[in-house]
Image (tube, rainbow, N blue to C red; front, side, top):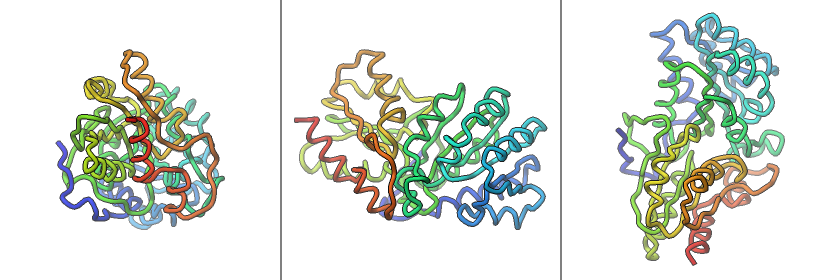
Length: 319
């Protein structure tokens, strides 16, 4: 069960710190958990794991494909690997290794892709991932998640440690606004209705959940009632909830820090099309573009992913 935070303006813990501290905590009780890094220990704070658990930390260097191979080998021997690198390097750069050494070989890989989409900031276009979820959701039986905040992220990491298979989770390294109260629990493959509404259904994931709630609150004042679903699991998608909540809505909008091609919006569109749901639908995300250099705040505006941008999209589709 989840409970919404009383103060949505509050910033949560630094997300990379949440991943690291959760892994360290689990290592105390489970000697099979191992951490792997691709020369980004400072950026991810995985270097803290190297200090506390040096025998269960492997620095693979700038060799992401090798890191996946090492992790797959460890899984074969019964270990539970958590591996990190920036989102584009955790997905498009190593996809063949994840596919064959991981998924096809029935190994377990818990892959943390950090700084997805506009959160990459000044690292620029080469480090930008607008396609990571599109890539990973093609893997048979993979679980792909985009947690909304530190509370949900901590739950995800703990749950993955007890599950087998390919698990991909993406998150900003820095703090994001709080959505859920500490102690909240979730279910993979089930979306969360975080705000009720009667006119428009907003389906969102990741740190943009906070922006979607901002937009919904503002539109309520303008007489447009918006329901918001945190669809933190992109695969498997909660098709039943989408079908149920689409009923009697005037419009449906997906909202994501990802390309409109292949990610959450595409997954939602597949459900709507296959079930012949005739409600106007708009994918709001990054258009067919490459990334660029800028601060995260600048890039969020540049790629049209602010609360104001979402409001304009909703008002346009309602009209």
